[in-house]
Length: 420
RNA sequence: GAGCUUGUAGCUCAGUUGGUUAGAGCGCCAGGUUGUGGCCCUGGAGGCCGUGGGUUCAAAUCCCAUCAGGCUCCCCA
Image (cartoon, rainbow, N blue to C red; front, side):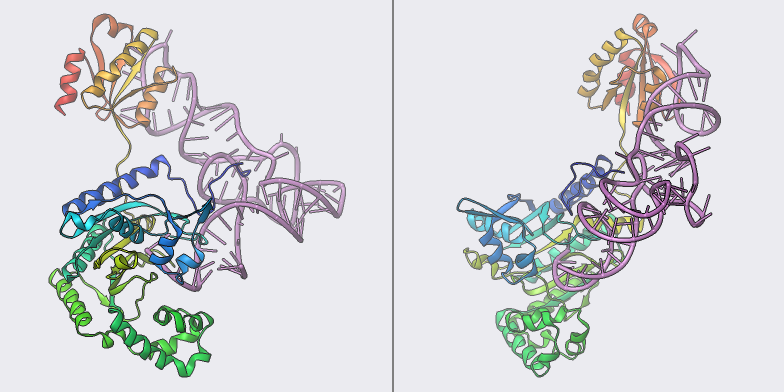
C-alpha cells in the first residue's frame, strides 16, 4: 500500500471507534472507583512552563534531559507534560488548595508526552490515570493509594501482577545511604558502566536499577537502603507494610527499586506484569514529601501513583480480557419510499426523547440493504415502514434477536420498548 | 542515539528457481427473495506489489538508495 500523504507523528496513534469503547469503559471504571474512594478529578492544561517540569521532575532525569517536547513563543517556554504529579502540585500551590481543608484527594486521566523511541508499550503520546493525596504524611495515605492501584487491575481482571515495594527514605536517611553506597562503589569506580559513572556523583541511587552487565556484581553486594533508614522513615515503612498485610495486599520488597523522578521520598512502589514484554511496569508511584515546597508551596507531604492506560490494554489483550461492550442501537427504522422515509426522520426524535437510541438508513438504499445495515449496527428492534403501514397505522415491529415481528400501532410499540 | 526486522487490496496474509492481464480469506457493494438481516450461492468494486534508481529480453521477486513502520537496548506508564 502506498504511504498516505498525511499520517500521525511517530509514536502518536489514533484511537478508532472500535477501540474507543474500551477506553470509555476504563475511564468510567476509574471515575466510579475513584469516587468510591472519595477522590475528586482535577484537569490541568496539556502544556506547562518548562521550569516547572525541570524543577519538579528533576534536571538530570531522563525524562527532562532527553524526552521533553518543548518550544517557545516569545518570552514563554512551553512543554508538553511528561507526567502529571508536578502539574497537579503546581495547581495545588497556585490555587491554595490546602485552604479547602483536610487532605486533597485528587485523580486525573489524560494524555502525556515523552519524546522516546516508540516500542511495545511505549508511545510518544500515551495516557495515564493516577491519584494524588496532598497533605498527609500518614502511612494510611500510602496504603490507600496502593490499594486503589491494585484494586483497579483486579477489577479489570488482571490478576497476575506483582507489587514491588521499597523505601528510599527521607533526605537524612538517603544522604546516609548515598554515602554508604558511594563508599561501597568507589574502589571499583573504574569498572562501572559509563552511565553509572555519570550517576555516581549526581544521583548514585539510580545506579541500583542499572541493567548494565558490568554493574551487577557491585549492585548485588551493595548495602541495602532499608538498613540506613532513620527512625521516622523506618517506622513509616514498617507501618505501610503492616497495613498492606492487614488488607491482604501481597507485595515483594525490592531494595533496588528506585524511581525515575527526583521528587520521591520514603515509599516507592511499582506494579509489574509479565504480559507486557520489555516495558513491564503497569503503574508506579510513591511518596513525595518535599515537592510541594520545592515548587513554592507550603510544607505538604504527599503520595501518589500513575498508571499507563495503553499498558493496561496490552495486558488485557494478552490475557484475553475484552473491555467494554459491542456497539448497538435500540431501534432501526427501515423505510420504503419517500413518504416512509419522511415518517422515519420525524419519528427518530420521538424515540430518542424516550431515552432510546434510534437510527435509520442515510443512503436511500433497498430494504434488504437496510435490514443488513440494521443487523450490522446490532440493532435490537427494527420498525419497518412502507405504504401499507402508513395507511393502516400499524407498523411492522421486528425483534431482531428473536426474528419475530408483529403489526402494532406506535403507541403499542412505545409501550413495548419502554417495558424493557 | 544504536542494533535487528518488515513494507503485496480497507484488514490478515499467499506469491514457486526473476517469465503471460498479481491471488486468497475476511470486509465492502449488488443480485439470488419487485417489502425483510444473520447461513448459503453468484457477481462486482478495490493494488503503478512503500518510493526512486539499477541489473535483465523480462523484476512484487535480484542489487543500491530512500521513506515509513515494528521490536530491542537505555529509561519509563
